[in-house]
Amino acid sequence: MQGDAFTYLATALIQFHKRTHTSPVSSFAQFVQLVPEQQQKEPLAEEFQLPVLNMCDVLVRSLLTYASSELRKIKQRQEDLLASVRTDRSRVFRSVAPPSSEIEGQPAPRNDIAMLYSLIVLYASLPSERALQFWGKLPSFLQWAVWSTQVRDVDMTMALYDMLSGLAKSQQCSELAYNFLARGGGEVTPGSSLLNSTGSYNPSPSISWSTIFALLKSRTSPALNPRTNQPPSLAASFGGFGSLATPQPHPPTQQPPQHIPIGPKDVLLAQSFLRLLSTVATSSVAVRLAISSNTQFHTSQLRCRSFLWVYLLNSRGPSLMRSLPFASLEWVLRV
Image (cartoon, rainbow, N blue to C red; front, side, top):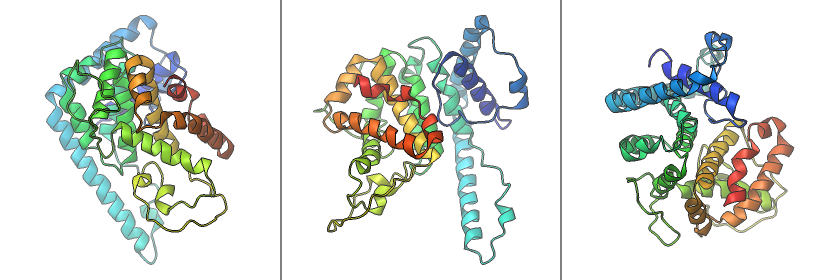
């Protein structure tokens, strides 16, 4: 794990997926650079593709079963390292003469757990229902992945949604994935009934359907009402989750249209949201009905607003638009 094994395997599987699919399977790892050995290798022959994926499946299951304590230690160590890096940078920027050499050229902190989540996306390329083991025998890993992901950590949130999308392939897995997020990352057991709009709803602060739709709504609402005065909290990025903060009441004032700040990570995080929506809505009719009938989600409004959001992305930055495939908006047509 300390030798970048997760990164090597995840990038190899992503390259394999790119040769067989048109849209990217991961938002977090799709721009990770390949090592020279991977760039020089020939594409994997078709007759060896499934055996290699099966071996990766065995590796992942064995790792989660027998090395779960080590994974927790690695995640805690990397969180401490990231916190120390942020503290050092804040101290440098507060100094009178900031030494830029201490920041420039500094390698990015390791994020092995996020790469592990990207590796688990391999179940999107395996036969249907292969990911049932995660929902039936390994639910504790999914629960740990949810509660240990901090809201402000955009990369981990992005990788987590990528992983859930890979595990939601097939009808039964997509229904279990819907239950998992509808309960806010709570316990999921096979065969449990879907929650409807009148059922109990206990969302998690960061990983839940209510969070996904609230974020999408907050990003598309200002586009439809550009002259409405928006509090500063509503102009925050996806990563900050500031759009969920309660605005303070104040008299409305007329302001000129403001551009919504949209950065590359905003687009990639939205892509991971939409990919998960597309996966569960495509795989299960029951999930489509549950999402469309839930009055809290306002899916009818979001269908129109999402197309407008795509238009704004295209007009403000073609490079950002190329990062957001139209395949991720398939849920808009199906819900």
